[in-house]
Length: 221
Image 1: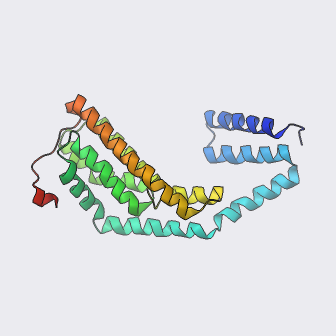
Image 2: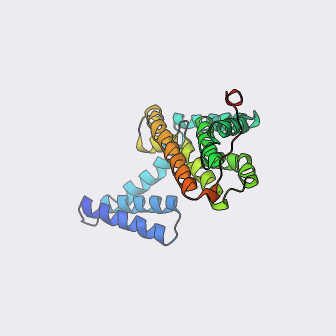
């Protein structure tokens, strides 16, 4: 429509998206508006309007989205069954002896809960209730505590079942099952990296978080 080649329109679109985000436009609005303007530049009003009117509906009624309420239900049942507190207590007994043990335990417990939740915000909210009081009682640094909860919550975005990966798979038209499987290893690696960073920080600065000892092998098992 504008007489520009596709590469130029793509570059302009990326720059326009960045400008929208920088000036404070919500990301989904910025992406939708940039995409619409790109279609308008490549085709015409009729094509851009038709695609803008059909794509949101076609993506919203896809069958794979039906798994999202089930993921949320599983996380809800797991929380009310006491799984979160038991996961944290188990991780606390196994990893409490390392520097920053409670923070490390929170990361691994969040990774375990992420395997049944699928929602990063729910994971962060749950462990803010379960782990923060214990870390505060043991004089853990407030910034470390908040960072651990926030970082632990992000693991639910990678470890299946991940609601974000399901939505992403639908948008990019990839296999939901394969994408969920592909997120498992990065999620575990991320948890190990978080734990390693916590241990390193607490070894260098012991005041950030002290180890928790006193558990026997019988109590751990």
